[in-house]
Length: 436
Image 1 (tube, rainbow, N blue to C red):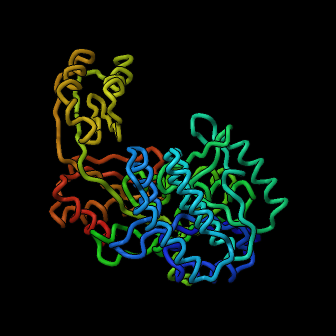
Image 2 (image 1 turned 45 degrees about the vertical axis):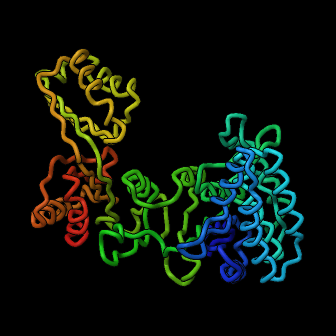
Image 3 (image 1 turned 90 degrees about the vertical axis):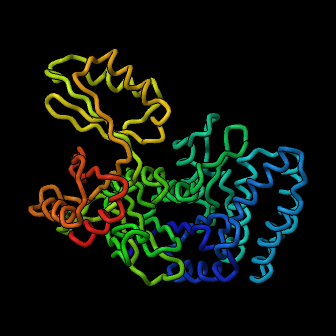
């Protein structure tokens, strides 16, 4: 059993007093869950609003000198309802009044948005009977709103010496002058990871409303199997290809320290969830871990005889896309050919300019463009070195009548990436899932 756990709870886990009760039961079930990072209350149902969204709305109204009393009243009602139903002692009404005054006085967007986590933290700390540590005291940003990892690590280490247990709100911290900065949306995941690294946790638990990650998108595959274990590298591959996983910045703070992440379900606390680890060599698994993908790419294919012998060819090619503000997703190449795969929306209004510059600077023999291409990634540790996996993938696609436009292997040897027509994307995901 891990000696020290940091538990982060998402917005759906704290959406109501009933959810708060579940969180308390989870935290108290294991005394090693000593540091808890809450998000702002999320939606109670599909018709509801996240508290953070309402706070952003308040800021926008105040910024345009429009009264936000009605919107803020909705926020206050949510917070006070949780407070009253749990019979808490914290003076939440005074906190709400002070926040409303700060919004009306022109508080920054980051400050306003962060108050959901702040209020959630006050409520949860009172409910659990543990100290509340304002994230502004331990999560430090530089003037440019980037995390100051060194100052933050020092502050968290000092906090751990004085607080054996604590609730630390997610999503925000403070700059050198005390101003509030936030991570991007979903940033409570990052706070949890940063706290786990700072207190040298043995495990970082991320509690949400799903029982871990799934092998494929449930919108495309009926009842896909859960992923029990996944490596950080596999997770990055799946996230890059569009799988809904952790906030991408949440992985780096703890990976360096070798701290595993356990994705778990607040509503099904006994479910196994997904454990994210640094290496899976010991478990002997070499199959497909997950399948993910995205539609709407454009493929620009260039052919030029003796291209490989031409110094600076690839540098000049990349420079064309860079100067036009187009990111390159993949760039598979052959002896006399190269294909540049880019998000369609980034090149849609620049395509002719990009093609003209390629002709001017690179003098290709031919250029061809394929639109409406989807990329499908089949990801798995050791998969490339395992006989038969690739054959199963291509057989499944062929039997489903999916035409393969291109094939590329990731440099990490963790994935096979297949280019297909947009219209075949859903059937391709289902076919590969069934066939592997």
